[in-house]
Image (cartoon, rainbow, N blue to C red; front, side):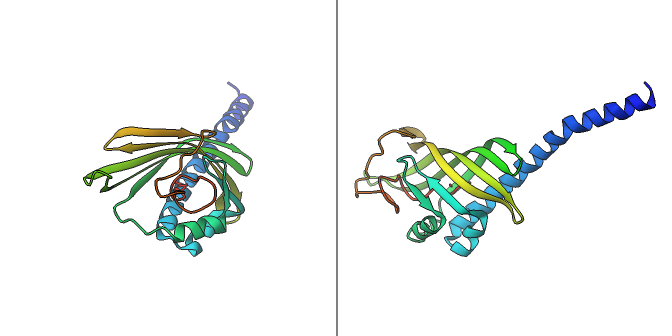
Length: 193
């Protein structure tokens, strides 16, 4: 190979590998942001949550109800912190287009509490959402989160799965959690959303 051929080959490889490297950086940055957001939401402190959300943030639940950042923060403030609750977010896919990233993420949350039968049970939710993040001078900010499905388990057994567009059942105490419409439970942490 000539020196010129080597230069062109190196340039071609750089063009091929650069997007993969940028994608890997964006994915790890977004994964870190989900963790920051999870911790901020668990604190219930708006001053820690709001800087991670885009100014025009919108959360859409399974019942197609929407809430702004301020409504999300106000709803979270009404929910007591549960020190026994565990949650983990897994980024399933990331598609970056310029300064926008489309993300599919799964959040698994669980806690132990007394059931209707008076016995202690392990309850869990597995939620899937489609999120949009935008790059800013402050890093990635969550612009939208749209719930796609939620599976509720008791002692590891699936009790109910609700998908986007399904009728959202009402809780035994009326509407479950803050917000409007038939929103299921408290606003889930985003990585919880």
